[in-house]
Image (cartoon, rainbow over all chains, first blue to last red; front, top):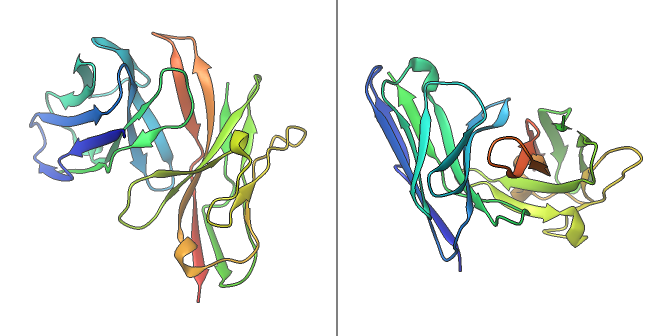
Length: 112
Length: 114
């Protein structure tokens, strides 16, 4: 069966420090991968998506970037965190034929 | 552009009362709609999808294309139904690399009062 792993679960980072959040999927090949940010009262905002290795599409301009070095690995990064980057980040995957998403357990990022 | 609207941020009902979580969508194509649920301290998970036409945990949702709605209903609320519920619309985005994407509503927090 397919599983998705996301880590770390929580992270506290100082302003200006770098960020790396990792997401991996098991049990499937060539998944579509997504990074979302979830904020109370604002729903889920799509940040990045990827349809294949090295293929990244950004939905919103921001201080973050994403990479997909392997088929089932998706990384969210920042060179210098801002206070406004604090939030709950979710990774998700779906089959490339559409349909429902499966979400990771999320990372609570607090920038101090 | 596609859009999902959940008009209620918070819905409180008594245990045993009927529940209806509202969802309206805007989409020019043929919609595929989902309900996701997030229980406290658990990950966001799929509750049901309209093409399955199934009942999950007593919840049902019918797609009404005339009213562009996909309301989630349950005849008798249980305390364990308390959670955050998101309505979502699947569409194919031709921009960028092109892929299927989900647009989410802002969510409704359901609180079932014992």
